[in-house]
Length: 315
Image (cartoon, rainbow, N blue to C red; front, top):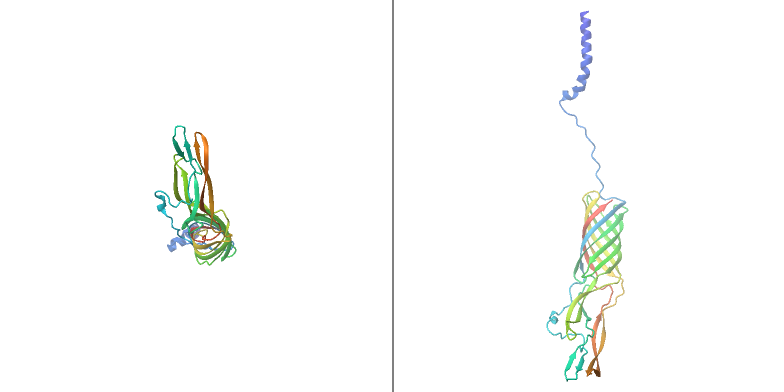
């Protein structure tokens, strides 16, 4: 009887203690923590088919035709000897009064003469050698390697703005985060300006005084010209959807009918008048002539190179 009771107590103790030993046993027995390995997340594809890219960039552009024709600053000093009007005679009014006094005055006759006499800048798009600008383009890549898009660009001229747009085609060769590419497009450009030299004659403090001086001023272009573009560059993806881009493009301006600068003759007439005792006693007609340059328009001297740096957003 005692053995049966002892056996029963031992079995009961084993049934009570065994689950606890099993719950804590393996970890405590081995003395080591079990590590659960998680699968690595998949690496993103930096360049994809059916991808939309938005590029926002700034640019530095330089003209193919740089430099200026000489501008003689010495003509600003003293009496001008290169006045385009020959002769430059202003009409006068001679008054003879009853007491014998004679006065001569210059009436206000064409007091603001302004004659274009020469083209200064070789470049006829920026009016100077280089320019800053920027733009944006949107491209769709139907494969990892080929895409098409539209581009808008703007460039600062001397005192104007040149802007245009293109349809583009881009081919790239991705490897890792990098993708060298070539691009080309066709479109249009408008605006810009050219520097010209002007002779100016302005009335000063009174009708008998005038000032003569030369200035160099831009003349704006108001004709749309065709624009072609070829270039090459490199893109680097910082993340799957954000990248950096840099490229260089050469841009051809053409297609506008070329009309060169031309010269024509300006004729101005006036009268010298003599008044005696309040009555006109004589009049003499005077004629002044000048040769003026009339700016042409076209696409000559407007090709330019452009370096672009920007950010790409890919979706």
